[in-house]
Structure formats: structure tokens, C-alpha cells
Length: 132
Image (cartoon, rainbow, N blue to C red; front, side, top):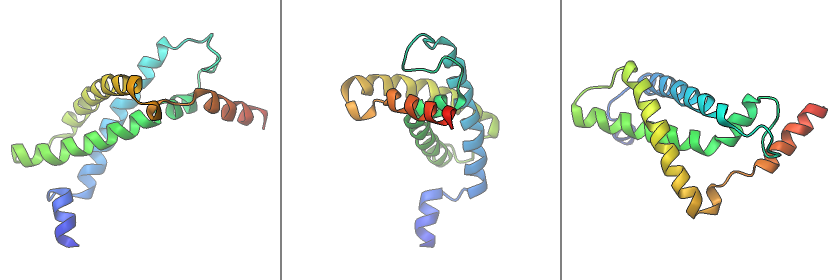
């Protein structure tokens, strides 16, 4: 089991991965938040009042794909260049992956239905919470 853990982590600490994912995650959140300024407020599939909860639910697959991609970047970049990426690099990786993952997911969404988000269902959940 120790060898398995070593191979997965590439010898890097759990704390390193958590910190790098934290800073990259912040970059993804900033990118999503900035992109949400272009939302169609008049659409029945989005809330009229800004909802951070809706933003997270609507982008859950994007966030998951971004975190997986970031882990792979940190893991294999350190193997290739011989040292860990800095936390400053983690922010840059987050923005780059966020933009790249956006393009990739947009392309995949056009081809595969399972990647589509059910905004009507998300809106029903949010409306139920408002009533409660």
C-alpha cells in the first residue's frame, strides 16, 4: 500500500496537493464568477437574483473535471521538471485549466448528453429552498 501511495503522489505531500488545489480552485471560482456576469437574467433556467449556490451546482461537472486535471498537472509536472510547482504557479494553472476545460466541456456537451446540466431541476431545488 505504501508503494501505491508513493506512485500516486509522486513523493509529494498531501499538504502540497491540498494547497495547490486550494489556490487553483480559487482561480476556477474567480473565472466562473467573472463568466457569470454574462448570464441571461431573463431566462427561466437561471435565477433572477444572483445565486452562488446556482453557480456551483450549474458548474459542478466543470469543477470536478478541473480538480482532476489540476491533480494530474501537479503530479506529472513535478515528475517531468524534477520539482514541485510553486503556489503562484497553482493559481496560473487554475486559470489556464479553467479556460481550457471550458472549451473542452463545451465541445463535449455538444456531443454527449450526459454532460448537460439540468438547470430546470436546479431551479426547482432553489425555489423550494426559498419557500422553506
